[in-house]
Amino acid sequence: MSKDLDEGFQDILAELDREEARVKIRMEMRRFGKPTTVIEGLKMSERDMHELCSKMKRSLATGGTVKDGTMILQGDHRESAAKMLVQQGFSEGSIEVL
Image (tube, rainbow, N blue to C red; front, side, top):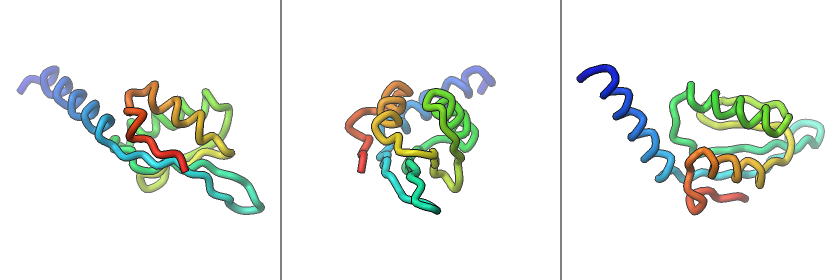
């Protein structure tokens, strides 16, 4: 296959993964009683997840990281994170805010 066709195929697969993903967004209390938002279940490549995390951190004006396929944001941003994931193409029904 040509490189352009292969990249287009990968884009289609990524879009299907986004639609079928079961994303869970929850808040955890971490050290010293600090709230953190944990996002699990994102079916994305590591690079795409880091890019999404960077966009979310900039938009929410907060810190965060990606570890073991889980995105962790500083502070309680459950509702805002859910809205941003919908804007990124995830279906609203597949996002569970706990």
